[in-house]
Image 1 (cartoon, rainbow, N blue to C red):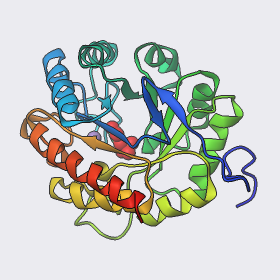
Image 2 (image 1 turned 120 degrees about the vertical axis):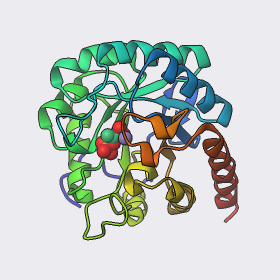
Image 3 (image 1 turned 135 degrees about the vertical axis):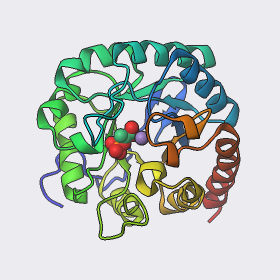
Length: 270
Ligand code: PEP
Ligand code: MN
């Protein structure tokens, strides 16, 4: 793959690792968990406690939601950022949240430990340039119609800005299949591990859109070489204001993490 001056894996095979809180991303297996959206101060605090108890090492929650319909819940904005930060601090978890607008990058960076660029904005070049200028780690999610090469070129945009702390995320691509929300492309994970030194995560929640498929896809992601997972969980999934059908509850998250940890250990002995 040509033209990747900064993102390509070099002949030495050296890989990027960076710290967020006390997690060493790229080395420690990262488990990001939390609700699709921050809905209230209580909801995110409860989610944070459940995520911590289940063994997650980072808390997620959207404050700016890129929704398919303009009539759906759009997130709490800055109020949501405040609740997220407070919940993370209360439970000792670093926090990640999405930025959707160049005008909000500085604000989001004030509250978050890691910044997410969502699938819909993977090729928003002004946004990529903006997060390239800051010194906060970035999680770049693959666009639903993007090739692996396009994803890597978008990471390259961030890296050229001087921000070296970039992590990629496979979250399912569009295919003709409609049973699942998207089609999880686990071959992209194996490919990315060959092509780039950047850590690679998998989001089985948005990939499948189905709660019951999160565990099998998470375990498969570990075996495909993923460096971590991003999982949606909610204290009461059926009441969630967004993505209710794909969120786990605290108990389900706990069971999932036990199985993921066993799989991570198993992979090490192969
Ligand atoms: C999310 O993680 O909140 C999200 C909207 O995911 P994606 O950008 O992958 O659709
Ligand atoms: Mn979601």
